[in-house]
Amino acid sequence: MLLLYGFLLTIFIALLAYRARSLSKSGAFAAIFLGTIIFGLGGIPWAVLLLTFFFTSSALSRAFKKRKQGLNEKYSKGDQRDAGQVFGNGGLAAAFVLFHFFYPESNISWIGFAASLAAVNADTWATELGVLNPTPPHMITNLRKRVEKGTSGGVSLVGTLASLAGSALIALLATLLVPTDSLITVHWSLFPLITFAGLAGSLFDSLLGATVQAMYFCPKDNKETEKHPLHTCGTETTHLRGWKWLTNDWVNFVCGGFGAVVAIVIR
Image 1 (cartoon, helix red, strand yellow):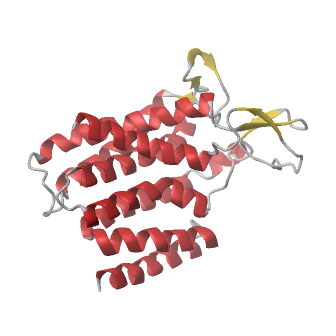
Image 2 (cartoon, rainbow, N blue to C red):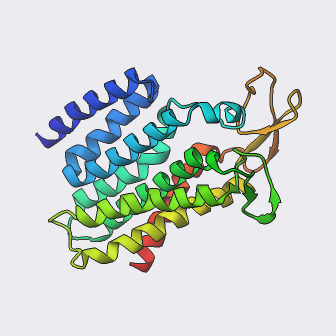
Image 3 (cartoon, rainbow, N blue to C red):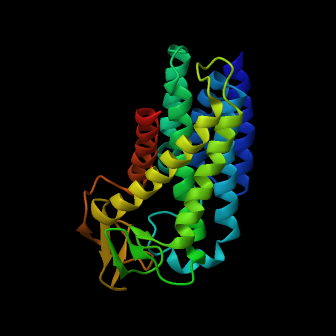
């Protein structure tokens, strides 16, 4: 019965998100699949964290859409999240809910779930709000080097503070909404733990973006980009650096995984 309720609720939310152009068709179906697992098998506390990530990230993306218009040529995808983005951001969270369902006596499920969402939320907030930084960002592997806004691996003060805030929001909710069936006894300790883990995951995302994420080059616009096989201008892009399989969706997945591992290890 819980799965049915989760399924119906997720369909409603996915439909609204699709009509608002926050999700593509494939993204809506992926959201229904993951949402059914998280809402149906997890329950309200787990659903609240997921919905907080989705609604805040979608709101920020919409609010600062005009400021990002000149940066779309760098990003692999637009504002509408497709299935790859949905699984990249929420797939690991759903896996922790499944782990909790089969092993309810373990306390790592809630910690890993919250930390993975804190990490992807931190990364999303950094991306959406980092464009407000008045100066070009620094490359995370060489802080003396300035790069264009939107460059993978670029970090800024505004972006880092936004990342911290995004992680702290999920951490606060994770502290206040600890499931009654979890074995976590000292709730207050979750806030600094999840906040730190989320920020660490976001910074690791930037490190991957600067080193091994697949990046391409548009010879017509003379621009580095995540887009492949065609750039915004329609020109075919050529591989510039990084592992070809490590797209932005996989980087987001690893970002969440790194945050979860950090939280579980130091809990």
